[in-house]
Image (tube, rainbow, N blue to C red; front, side, top):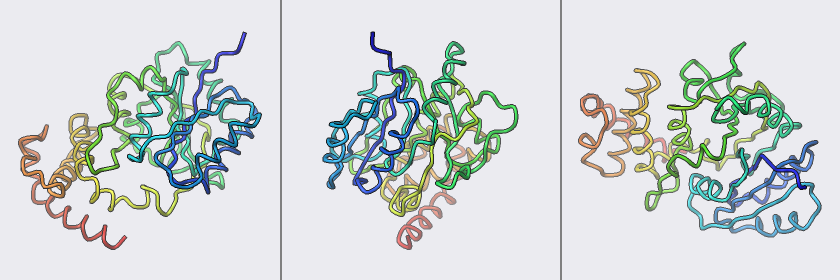
Length: 297
């Protein structure tokens, strides 16, 4: 009888054939190959499809699945991934990153320990290619947390999130706004945080390299090009605030995004109307800053 595979590693890819090979090679080097690799091609115009087809024809020790979709941005690639995942767990490894040595074994071993405790999944560490942890690690003795709770307590830097597939599918998909291609992936995570915690795995699971044309290095342009998506995310944050200070910041950003999108009904549509009135002038000022910064970048 075939062994049941518990983990899908999915990789959204858009014109990343030049970096996708190192992602693939990091999977090949795993001592434990009890996983499926799902590549979601987000409308690439390079030779991504050809590369993946070549790898599918090889004996890799793990199954490779490939799904092509029209370009719609990272969040739509995540939606497509979740529609095509049928394993108990899933984790995203970006097309310019590498799965850390031994990561699959560490994930599966940790899940075996906590599987019966109704966690939404596992939260682990990201590091750069030299092995330096991105941002801060986990406080000593931390065994569980929510994603937003970790950051609210002073945590920083991207973390690797391994989710139960049934949990991630239980929540609404990332919305799509016409003409826009960015929604914060934290949308689903914030909703999940209201009910579930994550088990902490104090191990490096992924080595990351931020690309010059990636969203992390072009956030001002993302604010300008995707204002409806950002306004949506800020409303979610205001509905589920992590602190008073952050609530005010999110409200100012909400106003800014609404101004940039031309939405004049932003006060009536806000979940925090009085605060939005107070944040209107700072929000307008921020919209001007966004325009200026986006042109400089």
